[in-house]
Length: 125
Length: 125
DNA sequence: CAATGTACCATTTGTAGTAAGGGTGCAAGT
DNA sequence: ACTTGCACCCTTACTACAAATGGTACATTG
Image (tube, rainbow over all chains, first blue to last red; front, side):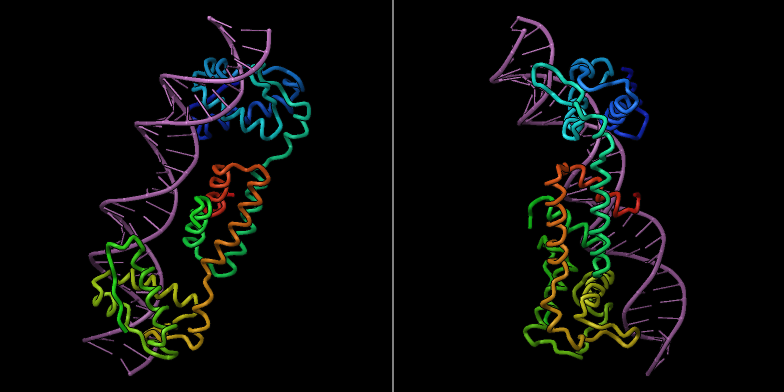
């Protein structure tokens, strides 16, 4: 598995990581059950912080692309290939687009929507 | 009509203005058809910028609390009293609360929701 | 003990948005 | 001429957040 990180790329490092691991899965370079390097290992190899790799791994696990087994390491999820097609962030964008369109139709200002959004996200309702 | 602005109040000036005008409407101090001071006039009286008053007036007109008739001045909307009960910002908050709850149930991260929201609001879809 | 994922503390940098102010100009009606 | 609302320009604070980094510590298993 070859992973390369480009610091000059405006795409966040953790996002580059996720993209490349997903790509390796769909290409077949990584298959169900394959072991991934540990967080510390990969972070050292790529010269990035542990937490950057940890973040990518966390999101990949949430998307069921990988499986972390605690002290036993991290492996490719049995259903990784199928789950690569499911892009949660696209779903989020679609849902929000619809909701925001509704609000604007109702006469809401961009600013008002932003303020209300901030309040909801911070539980200051 | 008495309007007082408190600069030390964390509530934005334009928001204080809106609140007080609405209050005057429900109290009966301002009735349908009554004339409001012009933007420049009120701004001078309260020692605030024209644009601050203009912003309050714009939002009040959108909420059908007042009616601006161009060069002829600004007046209380015929249905002002009824429309004071309709708080659009509450509606916005309710709608967003529901949508965001759905997204979180689906496994979305706060950060992801924020990013997606920002993209949608800026048409960078 | 070594390695694993994970959780917490913290910081810095850059970006984006609100709120408010200052200014200048324009079309429309009196 | 004068006033009206409204449209742009630009600037200043302030706040919130993302991204990344640093360090320390934990329980677990081999």
